[in-house]
Each structure stands twice: as structure tokens, then as C-alpha cells.
Image (cartoon, rainbow, N blue to C red; front, side, top):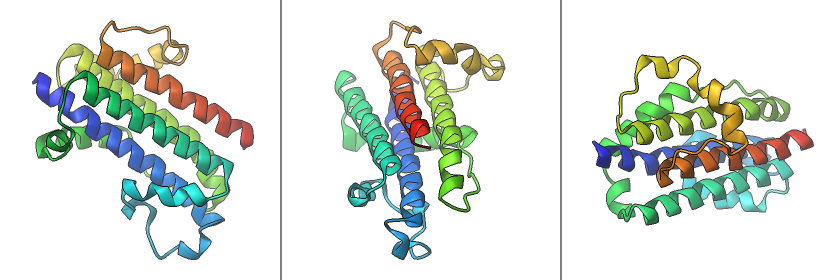
Length: 196
């Protein structure tokens, strides 16, 4: 059970990278990469292709890239502190399925019509990613895949301010790593909000 919980974490982080990448492309398609709009669906682009976004001259896209870097660094740290083999973990279908189950609880397909719609939806995107990370951290903290029903009764909302202030500590290096990522990603969202 513990192996499965630890194994799903990098997959969740990989899904998050893909989510940020998708929104980066949705924004870029409205401006710098408009010639690609309609040719390549943003959610069909592999997370490894996000380097394409480096050339995009848009502050919000660059902040999304900063978020991607934070998630990748979190994943690298997670592999190191748990002495996990990255290839072995990422090729494990069970871990991927468990992470997928978490992902689809929270991630919503927002309707995006233009650049401003995507920008407005980024608040919800970051919020749902925070919920996904908190869910995953709770699985680690409790040592179980299936969380009790009462977990879904606003526990995240009750803890959200503490998470953002980094005053919620679990005394577990893996859980605290995900808690820190929630706060770090929120700083990017605050910077995005200043632009928009």
C-alpha cells in the first residue's frame, strides 16, 4: 500500500505539468502561436513539448512555465528523498491509474473561448490543482488510497489558509513537500492575477 501511494505521487505531478502545459498552449494559441491553433489540440501535446512555450513572449505563459519548473523540481526531490527509480515508477500502470483516479476527481475541463476566458479560468485551474495536491498529500499522511468520506467535507477549505501561509506542517517530508508546492504555486497565481 505504501509503495502504491508513493508511486502515484510522481504520476499526479506529471498530470499537473501536463495541465499547466495545456493552459500555456491555450494562451499561446491566442497570440504568439496562433498559426498552430486548430492544428494541434493543447491537451494532446506531450508535457515534454512545453519547451515550445519558452519562445512565447507572454508574461502569463512564462509564469505557467515557472509553475511547471516548480512541479518538476518537486518531482525530482520526491524521487531523491524516497530513493525511487524514476523509470520504474513512471512505467508502472497501477500507479498511473491511481494517480488518474485522483486527477479526475478534481480537474475540470473549463470552457475557453478566448485569451481572457483562459486567463479568468486560471484561478480555478490553480485552485483545483491545489485540491489535487492536498488530496494526494492526505493519502500519504494517512497511508491509505481510499480517503474517508468526511475528508471530502471541506477539509481542504478549512486548511487552505494554513497551506498558503505555510503554517500547516505534517512532520512528514513527503507530505510537507506537497504542502510547500501548494504555497509555491499560489505565488505564481498571485503574479498572474497582478497581470490580469
